[in-house]
Amino acid sequence: MAARKETSTNNRNREVLGDFCGINYALNLLGGRWKLLILRKLESHTLRFSELKRTLPHITDRMLTLQLRELEQDGLISRTVFAEVPPRVEYALTASGQALAPTWQSLEVWGNAHRQAAEMTLTDKQ
Image (tube, rainbow, N blue to C red; front, top):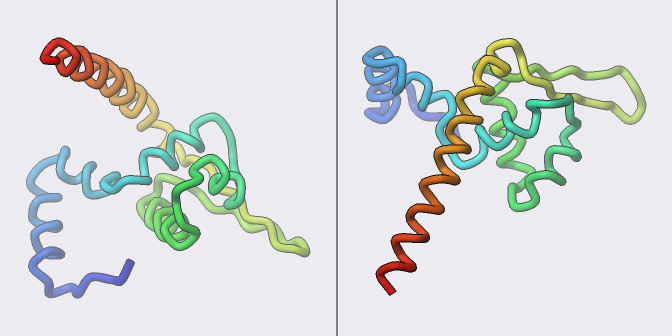
């Protein structure tokens, strides 16, 4: 993703809304299609880029790279580079990222229940 101009309305709104409320701040950090999925994959163990890519087959290399960089900048994951040939890089949750685990676990439970209820409602209407 291209960097936003510091003077853009979008960037300014992000700053103002992030300061306004903790929920908005959290959503700014976690927003997007892939970030929570990446964090969830790292929940139980450290993974290399290729391993993450394999568990998220529809994500592009570029998008995975961008999302990992953002999560690292936000302090939710750590990136460890090993001085080997070929180079090896591993990603793991930080303590802050681990603290989010109950949140995404609750969201998953809620999402599954809501989807099931919505499907039942759709079936009843037919």
